[in-house]
Image (tube, rainbow, N blue to C red; front, side, top):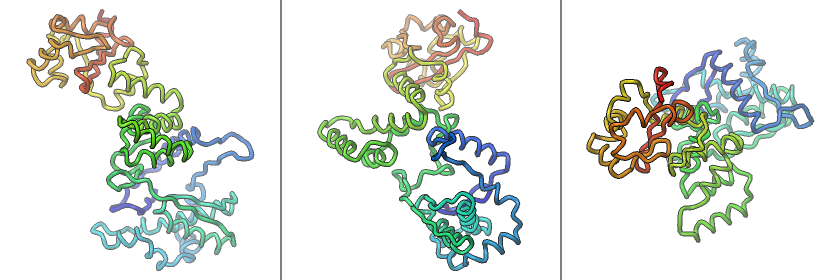
Length: 361
């Protein structure tokens, strides 16, 4: 409900309680894939700082937390300095964030015996404020570890409020899109990311680097990185789905796609359109132009004459131009409604029978 100004040039959007509650449930599900919450000596515990913050009054907070952290200490923080001199300035809400995070550390130290807080290097000021508060309020000695931020090629950090976000939630970033993101990592970054995001040891990564340098062809490291991280986050099923879709789009091997794979393509924004009864009476070239697969009827006819079009893996030629009804018949569809069209190597479109055509054959 209060945004951290660290690494930000402007204030974050404040979320309402309903959105926050939904986010908590999603985070719990995501973390359960990476951490073991089942009962036991080393079970992970998920807590919500609203439980110990929501009922605290402003006067109690100022007295019990605010008096232990000096304004001098807060002004020394780089993110505060940069925002104070920026056009957007810094609201009191964001300025208070350091106190709130410090109080979280104090509470977790007192109630859960937490001794170590870890975070990105931009969290150093927030975490060390918590160390001071634990010492002053609890008499506890606690510790901090910060890690360099993982940055993109343009120098900006990865983050849930940044542009081009890669989400762990498959409803926001599908396993296929997630897999493609890692395939697209630059050659300069890929070996560093293998060290950050996989359990491959350093010797293996260096061996892979040497093999890639000797091969003189496309590096294998991106394939390894994409497979390892996708399996870790989305499981073997997510990885298999991502590789099936990749094969379908780039090799034309779409006969093995599952219905959920087609749904992923829709989620990822693959160009798509519905095929209605009126469309079935049009020449195929007209449908290709309307779908944006071809720039003109001439372009579409040229593609058909070269057999450059495939629909659900089936080559389509000029002899099919007046047979849209036959090309989009239900018995040729995937799962009774999907037609994945591929023009050349790079142009794809997902046609779908609409409800009135679900029984067309």
